[in-house]
Length: 212
Image (cartoon, rainbow, N blue to C red; front, side):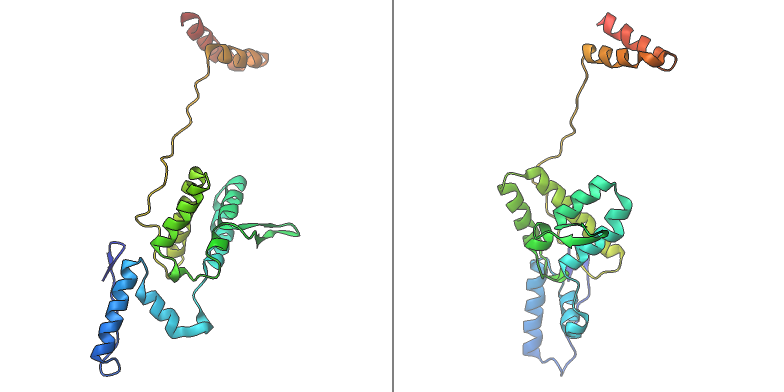
């Protein structure tokens, strides 16, 4: 079977333990799962192992991702915003720990196993954020979900990225701001206290402003 552009092997079962009728039913179920963006192999393994090795929930994955990746590899402000998007915040009594806020991704998908999240769930979540008037937040949420699932794959956590094929709701644009000649003169005028350092640049700006 092909899932998210990749060919994967899925074993239905051996005859006679699985007869022809059940084999056909299991095959149809697998095709349905693939069509919904789910991995029947992951779901089969989770069912076989039962509750003793239940698959990681989205909330568990998000917390692990925040502690082991976002907190270590992004700036303080960035990882705190990411935590808020995913539904967490630092514990006031112990900043090294995280507590759930009751909002965000962890709340929306509360209790769901990783393998249960489908592309349709991602699309619905992103659309909900857009509908409440926050398209740029929808972009950020999708971006961090992609990073989280990519990180999960790098950690050998069995999952497929349900964000594949989901497009950002709005294009991100760079905010370009060009200072006026008057603003440039004001800035460099204030820096003239350290004349030896800024004089070459200051003269170039004065020349530009005079010529304009």
